[in-house]
Each structure stands twice: as structure tokens, then as C-alpha cells.
Image (cartoon, rainbow, N blue to C red; front, side, top):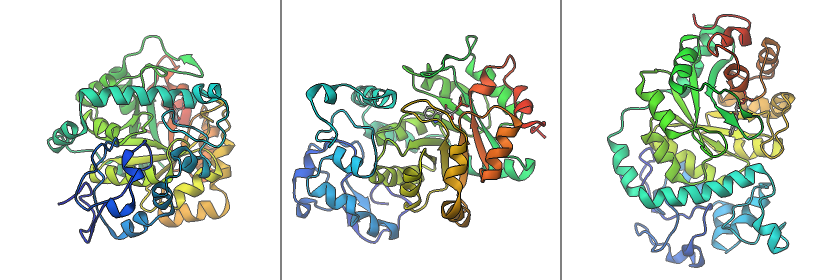
Amino acid sequence: MEGILAGCSPRVTVMFPVASSVNPARNRSSKELVPGVLLPGARRSAPLRCTRSEEGDDFVNSVEVQEWESGMSLNDIAAKQGIRIRRSHRTGHPSEGSKDEKDTPRNILEQIIWDKEVEVAQFKQTKPLETLKKAVEGAPPVRDFVGALRESYRRTGVPALIAEVKKASPSKGVLREDFDPVQIAKTYEKNGAACLSILTDEKYFQGSFRNLEAVRKAGVECPLLCKEFIIDSWQIYNARLKGADAVLLIAGVLPDLDIKYMTMICRELRLAALIEVHDEREMDRVLKIDGIQLIGINNRNLETFEVDISTTKKLLEGERGEIIQQRGIIVVGESGLFTPQDISYVQGAGVRAVLVGESLIKQVDPGKAISGLFGKDISK
Ligand SMILES: O=P(O)(O)OC[C@@H](O)[C@@H](O)c1c[nH]c2ccccc12
């Protein structure tokens, strides 16, 4: 199979650019995008080579690609899609004014993303993408994250639980001092969690890839979500190698083209992709992308930390909810869920799964806290 997209029907081999990093290749004309040849000096970690699929026709001719080729600034393209988070190495964001404004992150999410850029660049130097790709070929099989959610919902009649192994957060500080990720993961599993979410960001959440690996190796069977701020496809391969079955893609950070491209990589690696949205505009962008199976609605605004669980309801009302239902997309209600009333409220809005951290992890026994959260034992 040629290219990175093993699932694509091999009709035509094309080159395509990807919008998330400064790429010297973009100054070339599209005629120079020679099939089958990697552009020299391309900084993007993913290959600029792809086997076109049915959906790829649309992908390759998409407006974003044309904009990219026309030399539009990548921050401009992101801003046009309503993305407020700038990438530090991109230039020319319309709202960028003075030098100071360019050099200072405007909110915590932007700060996290700028730090992540530096971190990923360093990781890539020690472990190049090609090394990861080879290693992935021999990695153990992934577990069915989406299947586990469906099965749990069918069995219990309440939203499937993705329980989060979360030591700290930038908004709340340390949530639990005596933090043993493996023990917490095991008690979550025993008490009915369908899947687990393992935070891997070290600087802001005190998580780690060691935790992810440790939970996987400890014999926990629940599929695992790698909770990371993904800005580069290198991180997806890395997550797969460390034992993840699913990754998070945040629409408030990633332009459409990145989401499309990264979900294709996930499909190739058999990982589930949880696409996270927080407002109507992000939801509408995501609904325009084919093949999405899982959408997370984050009740927390990652720029301000405000939490409002009516966000979930608002984004599922009317036509949006209908489209989601028709396509069989599973919606995950994320953040700020504390009581059985909260769970029924989001279930009534249409969610089939919930992602919960704080309200479980802060309890003396986080596993036992699950029945308190749902108002019943969901382990049977
Ligand atoms: O602890 P809470 O409020 O139950 O939230 C869990 C989860 O939704 C939250 O950690 C989260 C949702 N999306 C994110 C993206 C990055 C970091 C963290 C998150």
C-alpha cells in the first residue's frame, strides 16, 4: 500500500500540503508538487504524499488547500475558521498588532499550545517520525474505544463513562495528592468505567506518557484515551506507541485541514479520534468533515476556564442534533459533571458518553464515587 492511508482506495497518488506548520514547500507552485516525491526541507512531520481516496477528491481541491497554496498565512487561515488560538511560529494573524502582542500568549490555551510546539520539536529531534512509524508496525493491537462506549451505553442505559486519570489542572491546581495512576485506573475499571482518559501533558496537568504506559502494562482492559494537546501528527504516532487506543483533537486549536488529515492518520493507525468542540462554530466545522465518529462537547472554555453544562445542550439542539443522530455519531459530554442530575441533563440533551475527572478523582475512593455520580452501580 502506497502512502500513509492504508484504508484509502488507491486511485490516484497526489501530493497535498498540510496547514499546521510553516512549510518552505508552500512557496512553490502547485505544479511543483510532484507525486511520490517528498518535498525537500518540508518541516511537517507527516509525509506530503497520500493515496487519494473517494473523500480525498474533495480534500485535495478544498478551499483550505487553495488558500495554503496561494501563500495565505497559516494563522490567517485558522483565524478565518474562527480559531482564536495562534501558533507562535506562524505569522500574520490579523489580530496581531505590536511585537509584544505577538510574543505574549493571550490566554492559557495559547500558552499551552506554544509550549507544546517547543516540546514536540524537541521530541522529534530525539525520535524522528520515521522511527516511530517503523515501531508502530510491531505495536500490539488497539482496543475498540468507540465499541466499548456503545456497549456500555447499551448495557447500562446511562451514558458510558470515560473516567479521567487526572492529577492536576491549570484551573484547579492539584486535585489529588496521593496519586497512583495505576491504582486509580484499576478502581475506575472495576467500578464500571467503559474507557479511561489518561492525561499526558506534564507541565500543566502533571500527567505523563509514563502513566499511560504504566496503565496499559498493568493489565487494565478498558480502551485508553491519550489526553494530550495534539498539534502535530508525530504526537499521534507517539500516542499509539505508548499504548493509546484513542486521541483527542481540539477543534479550537486545529484548522479543518489538520483535523481531516489527522483523522485519516488515526484511521490508518486504527485509533479512535475524539474531536472536541466548545461552541456552535466549532461544531459546524466538525460536522462538515466526513467520517467523524466521536464528538466531545467540552463544557469548559479552555481560554477562560468557565464551565457551563448547558453548553452541551445548546450544541445539540435543532439541526445539529439531528445530523449527529442520523450519522450515528457518539457525543461525549465533557467537564463539570458532578451529580446524577448533571448526568441525566446531558443524557437528555443527547450524549451517549461522559468524560469525568474532577468529581471522581477528588473523592477518597474514586472508584466508589462512580455509583454516586450516576446514582446507581454501573459495573454490572
Ligand atoms: O475534571 P472535569 O471537569 O470532570 O473535566 C474532565 C475533562 O473533560 C477535562 O479534563 C478536559 C476536557 N477537554 C480537555 C482538553 C485538555 C485538557 C483537559 C480537558
